[in-house]
Length: 146
Image (cartoon, rainbow, N blue to C red):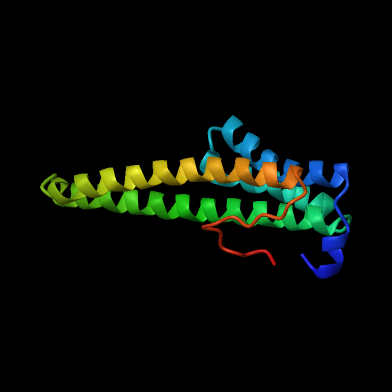
């Protein structure tokens, strides 16, 4: 936030739209069984497209939600690619590679579960911060939309 925005407290409507950017991503992703993170990107993206020119506060929160959900989508795609590679390695070695790929697959599954939990927790924290009129920057987020 710039110094001029710091003096202008966001209105109730702005806080609600900012929280909606985070919650729309969360709700759409949960309702669509995560759908590889695409729904979260769509939810945050819709709020960003609708409100980015109306309020710097809403735009900042919506951009953060969009970047975070895009990042989570990228992480999910990478995890899927690694999973496919592990299955491929097991098949190519006629099952003998399972000695190495099974522990790696279990570690990948645990990492995916941890990332999903962090996604959920960080999204709720962001929505609460937005509703309270506070800025929030997601950890683990790649800043793709500037």
